[in-house]
Image 1 (cartoon, one colour):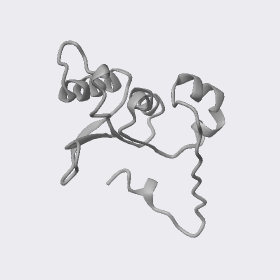
Image 2: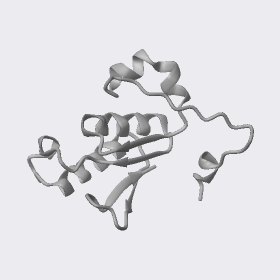
Image 3: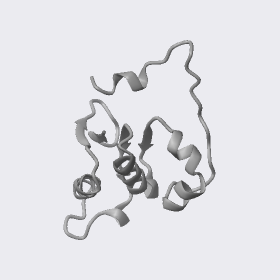
Length: 119
């Protein structure tokens, strides 16, 4: 697994977790550049408005990412295919156009969705 070293911690590791009360978008990335540049991975679970910015930043930075698009936000569903599947495909296509190397992974026994995007 080429991503395995990202997730391996040892006694020298100093993982950080930080919480912000701001939307994750382009302005957040500019205002918190030092923090965003130093993150090791992007995880977005049902991120609503954060789904697309997370995909965009992951694609641009080539950082590892695990993203489950929001399944309860029909306002994001594309008019050409106004379904969750259509939204998922549109997110995947957009992230790929921006240079991301995402793959669709299938999730077993999940309550709301059956797949995620992983880079």
